[in-house]
Length: 96
Figure 1 (tube, rainbow, N blue to C red):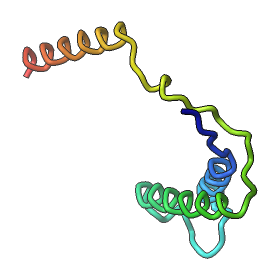
Figure 2: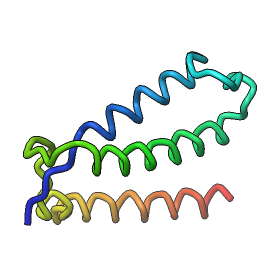
Figure 3: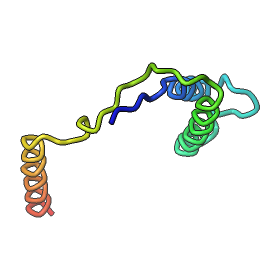
Figure 4: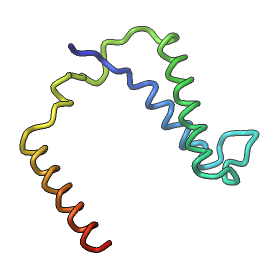
């Protein structure tokens, strides 16, 4: 199952975050807002922007091709992750 993801929402979210970072947006001095609060506001604004853009813009067939096979891990990766996990548990228990 393949689905195209529109890039307009991600682009608008990037531009809003850039505007907040450089203090280009009016009404608020974003340099005085704590970083994690700014991240929360960027997330909320991005979600609202993507929601609005998905209804305003026509259905475009361009975008990222997403396939379920992209999210499957290979056996060699899973083996390597397990070895690293065991190594980390050993090191933490040894030096704790």
